[in-house]
Image 1 (tube, rainbow, N blue to C red):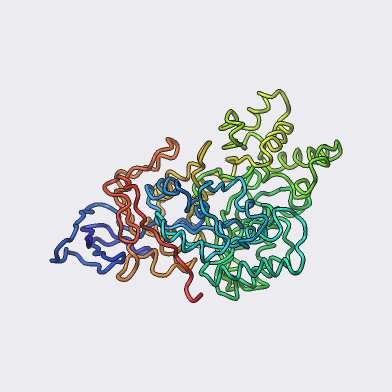
Image 2: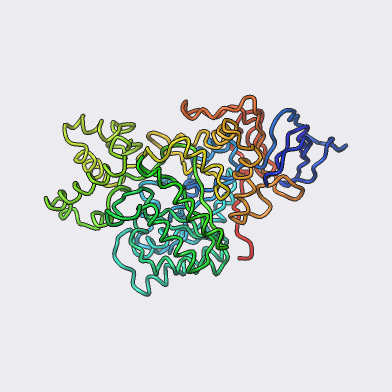
Length: 531
């Protein structure tokens, strides 16, 4: 049945001022923009008077590929659809649900504890087979990257054991097969195992492969703070050193580059903002295609080991217990937290396994008080007793003024970096990150059409999503309708937002009059063109 959205305030997705009019859609596409309903049978007319009608929102940084094939997959997508998101760029931070050797002895390590796939979810190492399986049951559109970390795990596990020449070739082969199958690009996770172990030449090879297919390289950097345990303790900000490393890769290869979640972890890192933005602006001025994405919260989801140095993670359990090792680690952590303005109170346990339900929602100091030990020992105990697999919500990433500046920067895009966890404390971004962006835009006077472009058309163009993110004839009918008078993100209440009246995915109404419609397999896998 054709649908006509009548009298809406239409945003084109590319930043033009909105215009009042109507949209006719059928067969999953927008057929026509017109001011009056056509005279045709079986036409559903929806009055959108006074409401914003815009392209369906695109989450530029998601991990929902890991939850697309389980029997409860829809539960992972529903909160995002309810907040108006219709398309997810997945496979970020080096981790994708596919893109590794099917025969790998390390397949069970893919995703690890941070992205736990359902037991009944079929697993596919072959990227083409995975995309086909997801295409059959997707609740929303999936635009997948393939992860360097997943390909490397498939070859060598999560360990720091150097790849052999043959192993490196097999790893690159898996990523190239994924690109040929239609992956939008490759992601790196340089703060996580095994990405932290990859030497620069390996990273350059990955970037050259991305460049060969004219796709995009997205990167979770090696450091997101002024001081970290990834570099020597003194000298230039570690966040800026990590950015320098990536800028070198861009200049050496010419690869299109997206910096994953520009955040400034620790209060003493916040002054690094101007210098960080200058690096992006300089690269753009030199002619390189670079940008970054962000979320509107001052915390994010991570793993408990994210603040541990690579050298410590490479040690055996026996070596970690050595007094000298503990003393060295304690001194480094003590100095780092002092220099950062970030510490154990900023780490909240979101989940640590079924054996530790009482840890959920507690900070490290709260666990230390319960256990009668120091914060440092409580942190290591939480790491060890969760088999280094606990997930956390990490605070102190930014402040509201900083976030508002970033969201207006011409090279920024919007995203959530949030996923529904089966148990434990949820990341508030799953409920209303994108409505919060619009709330923030209204509060600071940032033109709504420009904010909308960052969550729709500009993201689609950045990731080469053909016919997505725009309101125009021929585009896919991914549409989000918002009542601006009712818009409220409700993140703090952990409730779906208000004001999202209709959401269409490929012309299918997944939210209708504010109510979510269960069981619709409305999504598609979006493949890169010219594979």
